[in-house]
Length: 479
Ligand SMILES: *Cc1c(COP(=O)(O)O)cnc(C)c1O
Image (cartoon, rainbow, N blue to C red; front, side):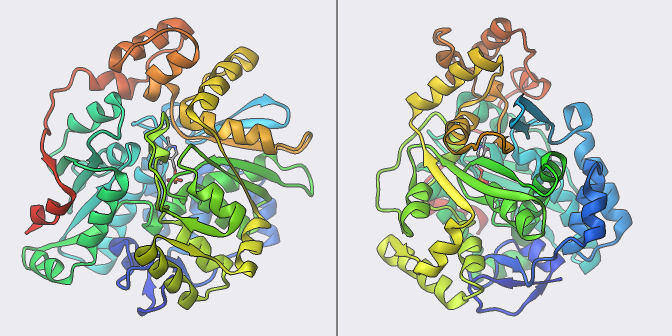
């Protein structure tokens, strides 16, 4: 399988290059040249298949890498998940399930991709004979950073640097990152929001001169952000799995996805295009509802206020992965993608063609909710179903309730453990105020659920990283 850029201004790349480079040389995102489709036999076999076998089947369709290495990588990645199941679905009602993607080491769904990506990168590095150290840079709105650090720590031939917005992550998220262990890791706070950090990381990736000077030191930049195809691909698997597990004969399963950078929900779209029985995809936003407005109107407009919400991993104004959907829904018209992105850069907005919007709306719905509404959903869901959810998942629950069709299976994608955002969850339950680790303990004693091991361990680790940088200084760290 070859990979082409959404902006169409560079040569096709093979899978290892696409995964090792992250971003395409023309600033676009790599997409597979065509989307592979399951055969009828594979669809038959997919009913009742194990998660790891499903992962192998999906990955092999996109990556021509040795089967044995892929198998080992998949096994090792998912053995680190509590209970050994990366994406268990809890049914709240007969037609409403919650797919819990947070049983990995950092308690957020990013682990699903970031436990596998470093292993894929190692295989790609071997297969291409690359000698340089892969220098992974990641801007994070909270969860990616820790998951990347945990995934890459001490992986030979890699180094990882994470930038998080100074005031944009929770106390526990911050503690998870600044205590990170490992000899190849660095963590910086950025004076700005997530978009500032992400924009500066992108500027580093596209700076030729910097890349050349880095190469002379035996290092090449790469990305672990969800713009990397190797991040997106592992996420396709859980949609395929849940759809085949829960679809009635001849029917489909709808999914609601709490959305930020549009990576998670886009993986659902790929699963659908591959022929998995995926029905509608509901994009759920918090008050930073730029995607909801886009799906409703076809206008993507970032000229708006940025809000810090109780679901910080979704506090995003520029959703990078949307570019891939624009490409796919625009039938591969990369000139159109280029003009949208140019308009976004120079004017702060773009309007997609009517046909493109129509194609998007034939699959996607969208809805946003406020912090107050999300908190109310947490309390209500706990009362009604005895089920505890975090504020990101609650944004999704709000949307799922709005778009669920009675009798038709709806799966809500749950992206973080409630313990990762314990103080908000306590507030939602009317259990008073508590911060940081005190909140974890309080939530645990209130609900009788144990604090997840991965979070509990953090409080005993020493702080290793305290540096702060301005977005404009980030480049200088690599000179
Ligand atoms: C990253 C993240 C999201 C958003 O996922 P995208 O792929 O960026 O849309 C939602 N919830 C949580 C908890 C996350 O960590």
